[in-house]
Amino acid sequence: MYKHIIYCLVVLFVAGCGHSGGSDTTTVNPSADPKTVSFVFSVISTSKLPSNVGALKFKVHISDNYNIVSDALTGEISQASLVSAPNAPIGNMVFGIYSASTRTAYISAVNSDPAFRHGDVVQLTCTEKLSDWTANGFPIAGFDPTLMQASGMDSSYMNSFDLTNKLLVQTRLIQ
Image (cartoon, rainbow, N blue to C red):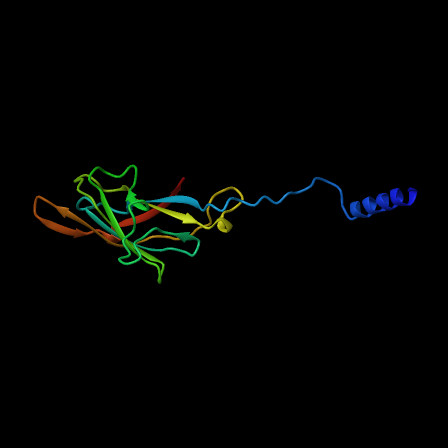
């Protein structure tokens, strides 16, 4: 009987060896649900604009960190993923297509506000792989939009203006 008790004590003692002390760390497996992030694209004028900003076209390379919901046949980006930014002018319309093979989105925005010269335009919502989230919950950088074309219209003279080189694009994360 004593042999069994001594044997159990030895097993417990050996099982406890190797522990360095201090606090235990526990690895927590995050849920399998992907995180959703939204990016807002804003335009800022770099010089005096001869007219309002009426139309914008962005090219966005989407990194492997993100997924966008789009139609598999046409590439049209879903309305769940692409909308006018919350602070965009009334009458702002957005639409876009996405190529999964090149991971490139082409996004257009048309604005009917004659006074719009800078501000939020587009909100793009993506899902991000959990492994790419940093410890503080913010996503690792994934893309930077390029302004391909910007134009404006002077309704008094019915002239159109190329504003591409007079605007910068900024991106910010909203959650």
